[in-house]
Each structure stands twice: as structure tokens, then as C-alpha cells.
Image (cartoon, helix red, strand yellow):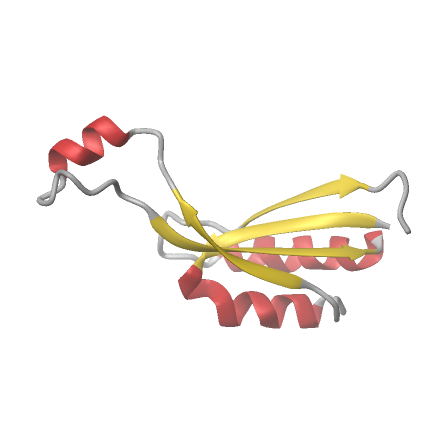
Length: 101
């Protein structure tokens, strides 16, 4: 069993849920998160409302699942990212689980 973590901008929520289902990952969780860029100085100088820090409304998905489903999910995400017209690709990582209860 492994832990897969996926992050994306909120606009991709429906597509990501579909990708998890296509990869036969039936149990997963999601949480809303704020994504931030570290290049705040340039962003603030270009921002009309300079007191506001730029952030992206994002989502974090995670699931404890088997490697076969994760491989399928990664292939689906690669295909999804290759067709994007934005600079906000879906990101995913896998973490091995040494023990679980």
C-alpha cells in the first residue's frame, strides 16, 4: 500500500474526481488549500491591490491505495497535463507506507 497525493487548482476538481474513478481508486479524500508562489515581491509590485498576497485556490487529494491503481492514475494525469492550456499542471507524488493499522 502507498499514499498518493495530488494537488491541482480548484478548476480541475471535476476532472480529477473522474481520473481517480478511471484509475479504480474508489476511496480518496480531498481538502481545499491555498497555493502560494514564493516570488511575492514581483507579484506584489505588479498587483493593483498591492497589499493582497497572491494565492491560488487549490485542492489536495490523497488516497491510500495499491501501486497498480497509482500507475494508472499517473498515466491519466500525464495525459491530462499534456492537453492543458494553462501553466497549472496537476502534481502528484507517491509515498510508501511502512506500517498501517
